[in-house]
Image 1 (cartoon, rainbow, N blue to C red):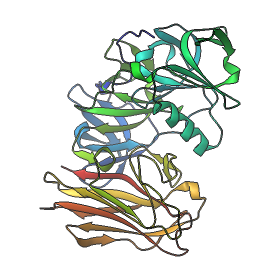
Image 2 (cartoon, helix red, strand yellow; image 1 turned 180 degrees about the vertical axis):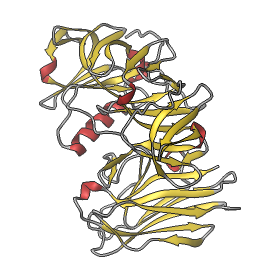
Image 3 (cartoon, rainbow, N blue to C red; image 1 turned 90 degrees about the vertical axis):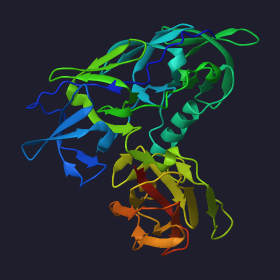
Image 4 (tube, helix red, strand yellow; image 1 turned 60 degrees about the horizontal axis):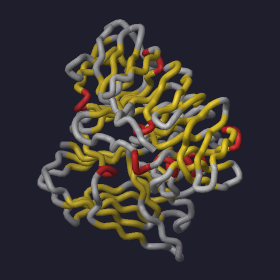
Length: 395
């Protein structure tokens, strides 16, 4: 399928500051240095300085020095457009051809998106969170060189998507052209071989909306009346600034372990089940959730396990929030331990399911190796889904 080589998934944040304007309800600012504080977002200027209102005073922070403001929201019922960069856009898909799809978003209105910037569409997201997460990830991480339709009954059809119209998707297979109602389609996957790669260099920023949409941004304009996310292809998505509820820059001073290659990993099963570690997901593959919050960055491990990183440049500190994933419904118990150059630097008390996240900070001066360890606690390895949320190295 020929595609226009454009992308809408990445944007850089630029904003005008309205000092008296409040864009969201008192979420938490987590800076690279200093203590977290509760604040509303007032604006972001053209030089990438974010201004927050905390206790009726302005506080300015460069985006490069920001770990996170706010938290991602759960996605609405759907449909959900999945971008090539792993972003999510809650929008109805009402039309399309071999180059693009036409969507109607409750936040951004009608918009046309190039297929080269998209992974696919989840028409009917499962209500159960774990199942929804896994389906979205299967679309984002799909491989192959054809378009594909996954039907509600589990069947899959491969071919070339020729168009979308009147609630039907027209697919040309090796045998014939068929039209299938979107009510029968669980997910539509666009040819992975034709996707534009997501940019990795420079300062980028995950930008979350109140309806659960989440886009990786390189440009966004905010003022007291409008938020306009602009694509590198000139596409602009406009919404109310109050809909922006979450920011998490990438490429700043915080370096996330989930974006680095581990030097080693070892899991010691209590019986026979072996658990790999997960990046930006919990041990079972769902989103990192702890304390009724979603965390976009972090590591998921299962007791007992050791994950090793070689530090190839100087870092100031290792920070994270520790907890048992909410998917255990209050089950699970582990001990977290952090080793630096073979010596234990910090360990936690027993952390149990249902507890709020526990912050941890470890000095890394002159360090060359970092080991993250999850140990058994109360009941062997039962439901020991340990999350290292926002696990990061500070430049």
